[in-house]
Image 1 (cartoon, rainbow, N blue to C red):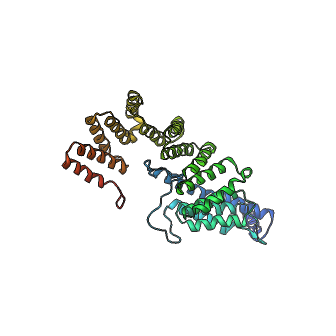
Image 2: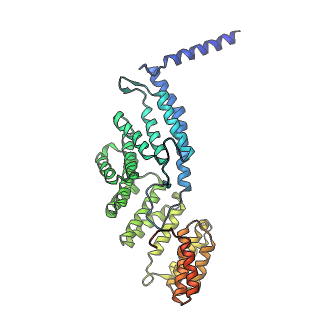
Image 3: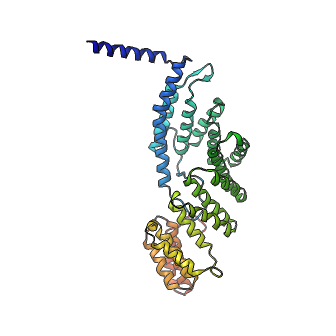
Length: 383
C-alpha cells in the first residue's frame, strides 16, 4: 500500500513539474527543461543520424583523381528532389529530429528565443537539407539563424554553410564576397572555422578558374584544419592546382606532404600522390632506376591491392617511355584485368593499346581498341 502511494506521489510530482515547464513561460525551470530535453534527446539522435549519413556519403564517394578534386564530396544526381522528398534516410531522420526539436521545444517569447538549443536545431536542419541536395530549403535555415540569432555561437558556421549553399546554387561571386567579409573578422573565428571558410573560398575560386587565388586559400585551409583527412585532401588539391599551372616541382612538394601523412590520412590520397609525382617524372634527366624501384615497391605492397590497376597503368607508362613496348602492353592488359572501378582509367589503357598498334600499322587491332575506349568514356564529350 505504501509503495503504491509513493508511486502515485512520484507521478503527481512529475506531472506538476511537466505542467510547470510550459514553452510560453520564461522561467528557469522551463528554459532548462526544454534545453536539456532538446539537446540530449532529440538533437542528439538527429546529430547521430546526420553523422552516419555524411560518413556513408564520404566512404562511398568515388573521387575522380584525373581532375581537380572537389573540396567536399557531395553527389549531384540528375533529378531535383521534390519538396519533402529525401535522398538518404539518415539525412531525412536528421531533418525530422531538427524539426521536432523546434516544434516541441522552441520558447519564442516576446520576440526572443529563450531556448539556447534552437539555433542548434536550425543548424542541423540546414545541414541535413544541404546534404540532401535541397539547397534552397537549406538556405532558409541558415538565413533564419543569421536573422533571428545574432548572438548565437553558430553565426560563423551559419555564414560558412550559407556560402557553401550559394556556391551550389551557382552564386559563386556572392559566396566569395561573403567569405572574404567573414575572414576579415579573424578574431571572431576559431581555427577550424577559419579553415572551413578558407577551403570554401578555394572552391569558389576553382569554379571561377582563378587558380592562383585558390592556391592561397587551400594552403591556409590545409595548414589550419585539425582533421587529417581534410589535411591530406587539401594538400593533394594544392598539388593538382600547381600541376594545372605547370609548376611541377611545387606540385611534387605538396604531394610529398600528403605522402608524409601516411596512415593519418586515407591511403587513396597517398597512392594518388605517388602516381601524380610519377607523372611529373622527367625521363631525360631523372633517375629511371630509382623510379622503377618505386613502382616495384608500390606494386608489391599488399596494402596497395585496391589500387593495383592505377599502379600497373603507371608501370605500363614507364615501360612505354623507356622504349619497352612489349612490357608496356603486358602492363596495360594487367591494369584492364584488375577490373577496378575507375572507368576512365580503363579507357586510358585501351587508348594506349590502340595508339601502340596504330603506330605499328596494325590498324584493325587499333580500331578494336579504340572501339573499346569509346565504351568507357562519357558520351557527348569532345573526346
